[in-house]
Length: 426
Image (cartoon, rainbow, N blue to C red):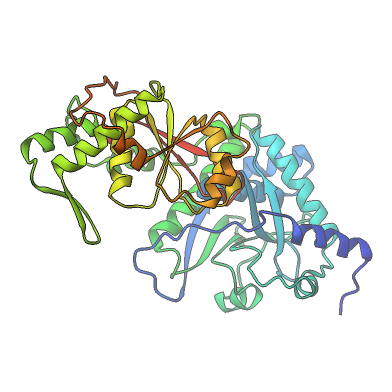
């Protein structure tokens, strides 16, 4: 049994208990089937030569260059600057959890950071990770990807003789294992072994391509800002921007609520929405939305003023959303039963000054509003009782005017508000 120093235990205790350590891979297969598969991609000789030269110039092992490219790929796949991968750079092949950041800067700076992190890992290679995981009660996977680059101290890279079964035995939690294989003639190849219930062959080829692109960018200009460079090929970029956009269509010069008003005029007595045993026609829904919109304007709602709609998903919710659009405001959806701190953060960050809620205001909302005296609350029943006109308002709303703000889950940090203009809703 390996002897672990106190420094080893302290190092890995800090690494295992750090927040945000797990980096899940996207599930890129439409036909998940249990099994393992491989994809191989040769690293061009010119790139390999340039990467060797760069590693020598910087006095770092070639393995750190590959780890840098791998970190950049994971950041691109997940959309997160901080990533965790398994890193197998020891003779045992046992991967260690490696936490890296891909903050903006040059490839050279990213490589220096990656090398520093890798060096610390290798300094504690007599790792007590498994023992500490048991002591800390950690049952979740530490990582889903593994980069295998043996010879971290300048020895030859792996020869690729290990089987897929060997990989599974070493790290059964891995979804994707990327290895750098050196052939007898000196060529370098990327070997991707992946679970077919998570990735398919096309996805594996794309991920291999991202690695090759990252390596070529490092070799071409190590002083370039990596954050400004894309890993997508010209073909994939064209597919993402145009191929997935659907057919080109001419859009009407009208907002979503104006298109709804057109349907009201065409089919006023048709059923527009049903919830449980309740149903409203287009005319009824439109009239209620108009009354709510006028009630909002009466309380000083400005152009692009944010209105939080804090209701359950019922017919009044639908009328409230339309009302915000009709009044020229910005719709902010808020789940009534969210924690008070979460509601307060959403209201504060969006600059919300008006809340549209149901009669049964939740305790979470009341608590959230206590330290926010500038935020006014309007109950839907109160707005209906005020007797506002039911006809359309005719408020001018520009296509580039903000329509709604939608906050992310915040699973990787603080929630962020995504904004959409009216033109985007079409």
